[in-house]
Length: 201
Image 1 (cartoon, rainbow, N blue to C red):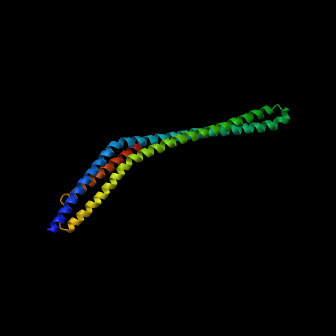
Image 2: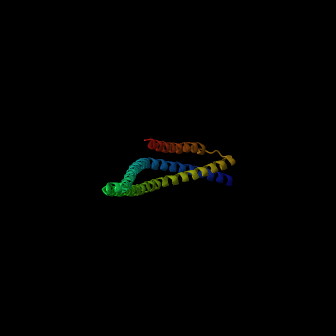
Image 3: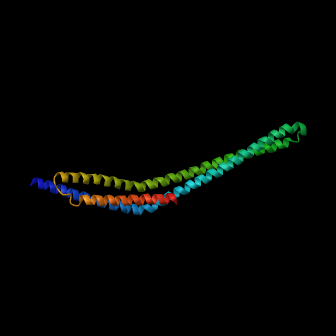
């Protein structure tokens, strides 16, 4: 009588874990379907920010190079004005003044581009951190569900092994496990497909 009671308890636990597993997978599917558009949108936002960062970097690099060229030209003009001063009786000193002014403008251009780049990068970095934080909060619950599903599957497999050792049939456990693993696989495939589609857009 006691052996029958143990077998009945094992069978009931197996059925309970199977039901829990089905519910966990349904919750995961529901959360995934609910959050997939939001996560896809956040990935697109990150791609747009990456493009914007690249554009800002190119523009500020061009501005810095232009400033450097202007500064170099100003330096050359200043040197030329000083070198020619003895031959032009000081008239070329105006060229030195123009060269110095060009050098100052070139330096200011470089500084402006560098400061603009730093400010825009800081703002975009803060936006990126917020998007990533939001995405992690959404994904966190799904990761917890996957962890529970994994634990549940392990429990079921252990119970089924115990049932086999006791000579009991696993009832619907074995087929349910394969069906449930198939469901989990579908969710994973959809997630992978969504990520690949988003990245390739």
